[in-house]
Length: 285
Ligand SMILES: [Fe+2]
Ligand SMILES: [Fe+2]
Image 1 (cartoon, helix red, strand yellow):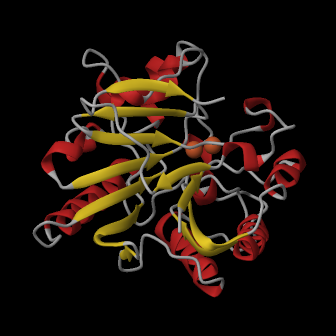
Image 2 (tube, protein in one colour; image 1 turned 180 degrees about the vertical axis):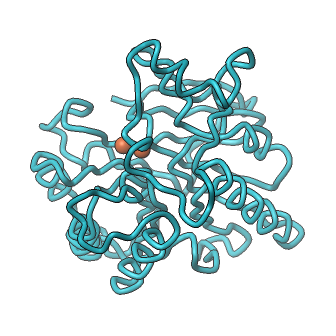
């Protein structure tokens, strides 16, 4: 059996739905969906119907897009309440979320599949800008993430506090792994600044992660890290740990003739590592 991964399905785009439908049935395999499925409950439900028909088990962690509170959403849910509603929708479809106990990989009971909602705290901004100046610094290059208007943190005062609470909880869970066990971390947001490569919009990195997770792969027994959000598909290695950016992306970010089938990343069984466990980026088409 295999574990596959894909993120940033963005099924609000008709083209992305067509891409998703290209996936072949793999009734023995699992898939990790690493956030940005879409913006509405209908987007989630549609996606879980497609993927439950193709895979044995689906795991999900939210992206920023799922957490948006759109003016058209009659529920009016914001922040944590919005997230909890999304978790409910996933559970109605048997999809595992960051709120479920980590499951172990059937072929390796010491490997825990760990979907996480970690968010960001603007600390990917350079030192001389600082988190407080990050949004204004990005605005100098006419960049402003829609999260600033649509992603709310209630009941936390801001996304910074929500992010820190999530990181605290995740660190506690990683510390509690039994001796000799490892985690396969799934976070929509990349764990390290040096993996946040956005050549056309470098200052967008302020909405991409938190420095608090940069040394996680050496502090905790982490086997592999999956992330999305960047729409820049790559494989990297740091200190013997594999980092996979597994985005499909917006319609302009992938080749429609390949469909999602052409972008499905194999995570387990793990491919051969470079002998040093270092290297990358290995860019994917
Ligand atoms: Fe995305
Ligand atoms: Fe995203």
